[in-house]
Amino acid sequence: MGKAYKHLFFDLDHTLWDFDKNSELTLRQLYNEYKLWERGINDFDVFFKAYCIHNDKLWERFRNGYIKREELRWKRIWLTLIDFKIGDTALAHEMSTAYIEILPTQTLLTPHSKELLEHCKDRYVMHLITNGFETTQWLKMQYSGIASYFTEVITSEKSNCLKPKREIFDYALKATGAECDSSIMIGDALEIDVMGALNAGWDQVYYNPTKKAHDRKPTYEISCFSELMKVF
Ligand SMILES: [Mg+2]
Image (cartoon, helix red, strand yellow):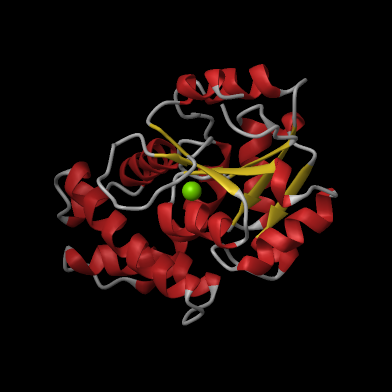
């Protein structure tokens, strides 16, 4: 059994909040609303796959500071539409705005994450550290009914820094009055959440639901949050 943790720091997207399923639901809604099959996109699943590829690439560029968030938001749709020979900047902007509005109102959480929060709520002080945007992340927490579990929500906007940089973890300790010896980071992104926390001197839980192979050595690795009930 591990150390005596006092503060649990969770990542939000893909960790507690089922980003993939919520994003897919939102895009499916837009696909139907904008009748994209009439524009030659016959299969939603193919459209969704293309979107995911562009989104991942642009997020990488955003994390590295090459693009701003506004560019990230509309270009992922614009580039996806271009894959289907639709060069329509206005449509891309319109869909992008709608996506941003609808996405955070989706409510799907990852399996057993709510149970884990409930299990931990009287034993630990819980917080979030997220690279997402302030207003968006609050909406997600409120709609999915988990906002009340967290004492501090550290966003990249508030701390002016992105995971995996050490500064955001140091900022989190200061903001919460926690110490790194009694803190643990729980996240789905190995190089961002886990390695970031490791480099800041924290213990880490790698949430790896698809059991991706890797050669890092996180403090804990789980594929389902039900496993964490035994740790915390
Ligand atoms: Mg994540």
